[in-house]
Image (cartoon, rainbow, N blue to C red; front, top):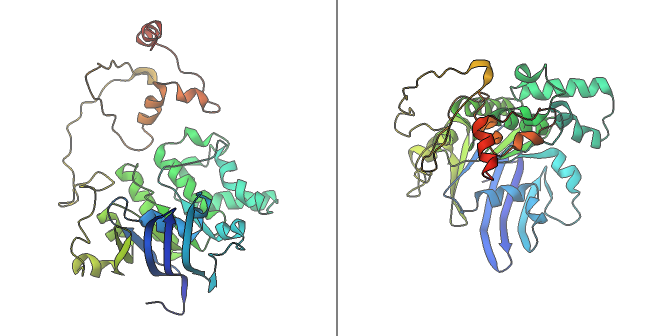
Length: 334
């Protein structure tokens, strides 16, 4: 059921890849300042539907999108639609952080410059406002000219949100934005989503995390095998679902690592390891699996990228030193 004040409405939207119909007729309405979660098992059509809203599926060869997508009352699902202007107003945040290979500042001002903003004071204010809106300003305000790839995964994702907010969109689409993040970063992203809603931005988020859907969304739509089978207020859908299995389609756990029962994971017992002068010596055996854990920004991904020299490609980062074990590995051709 749609209302007169709905910002975005889809009527019988379908998606076909060649002869395969991936999404059956789907009708949903999204209001200003509302957060809608799209849930369901993998491959059910959630992300396919999400990408329809700003016509990203049009970029896929052989993909056909049917039905109406009404944005401010105008059907944007037409070949005459200006994608440049549409995606200025309907932004998107992807599952994996994808900052540009530029500085933090340039990540924010790149799109506004393309849209004609050239005043330096205006751009500086835009950088600060966007980073504050994404709850990352205090962490990066003294390193705006450093590479975005020097940030942790959670910080990179919040930077991507700030980059989206810099265009002052009406709608923000999020495709599992917390699936690769730790609980602390997940909480920061969820708080940002609620802050965006309070400012009147319409947020549509795809998630496998049932707890996250319950925490951040006002309404939820449940997808299964290409059909949108149920939609309604989140509390109602989770407490009294009309469709069997509507609230049991997660991947067996929550994206932020917490157990479904009680929301708490068992606390591991950790032993503090000395790390003089920021150096870490560690040997890995061929038959062992080693987990690197810790809060966002603690260095685990940085260490991981050292193993195949990916950090050497980060602008401004000096090449890491090779210890005796690494030199032996190089001698063996590793």
